[in-house]
Image (tube, rainbow, N blue to C red):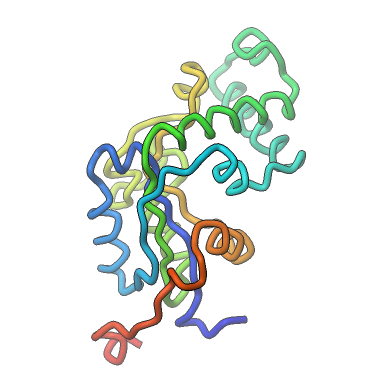
Length: 196
């Protein structure tokens, strides 16, 4: 287990966040919290790179399908009528395809963030995956109002500005996937001696 100050996570400012000029705001909120940006780049990933970002296992696909079915049940919609199936795996594949299209729609800014509880802290900063559920004061809560039901109706990915690693194993995979070792930097922020 790494030293608590050295926990790392990945943040992606997705194409909608880049196109809306929110890269600086995302970085500002991360740094304002006392977390450190140790790698940063803008990329236009190809389809294979994006595919490898996700687990793409049957369980992962099925889980996305189940979430979509839950959304349809919540709003009283018929998945078979709307999507042509109620098979969670098939629906998960559809959602994955929409995510690929979304992440290829423009450049993405990839960031490695380091600091105490960086994974949990960044997830608090970005807010709930569903922007309409995100608290005000979070990136998604302040800058997006999209919802799963609207995205599903329009056969597209949820526009939620950023991605943040969900746990340590996901963060480790994503750091290696998006960055070469030499692109990640070590330095001390001026206030580290005061804050910790």
